[in-house]
Length: 195
Image (cartoon, rainbow, N blue to C red; front, side, top):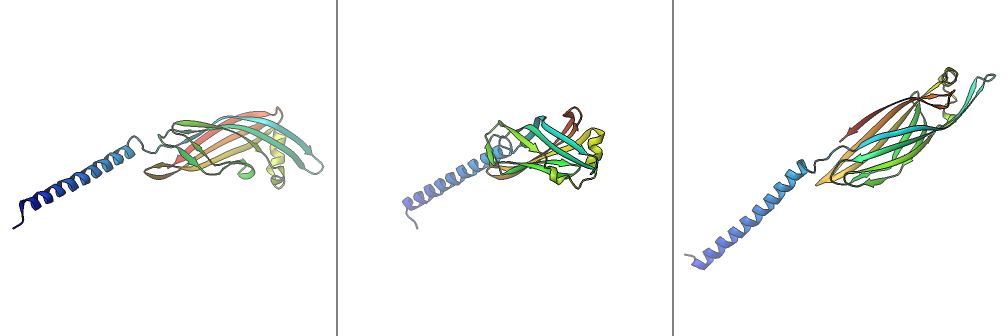
C-alpha cells in the first residue's frame, strides 16, 4: 500500500497537468476562433483612380503603309488592404496591350501595405512601337481615329494569419484613345481578387 503523501503528490501532479492542458486548449480555441472571424483574410482591392494620356505622337507614312506611334499613359492605382494584418506583395507588373498583344509594361516593385491601409501608386505605361509593326489593325485604327488599348495589373502577395494565405489581385482597364483630340475617349475597368 502506498503512503498517503505519495497519493496526494500524484493527485496534485495530475491536477496541475490537467490545468496546463486545459489552458493550452482554451488558448488554441481562442486563436482559432479569432483567426476564423476577426482576423479572417480579406481580399486586397486594387482600383484604378485615374488613367490619363501623358503623350501621344502619331504620324502616318502613306507611301509605305506604316504608322509611327508613341503613346504614354499615366495611371494612378491604389491597393487597399482591409485586413487587420499587413499585406506583403511580390514584384509585379502592369502591362499595356493592343488588341491582346503586349506592347508595353512597367514593373511594380515588391512592398508592404500595413493593416487597413491604402497604398497609392503612380505608374507610367509607354507603348513600345516596335511591337506594333507587324499588327495590320494599327493602320486601320489610327485612320479611324480610335486606338483601343487595355491595361492589365496583377499584384500577388500574402497575409499571415496563423499561417500564410496567398492573395492575387487583378485589374483590367479597357481604354479608347481618341487619336485626333489626343485624349482618352472611354475607360472601363474590371476588378478581381483571388484568395
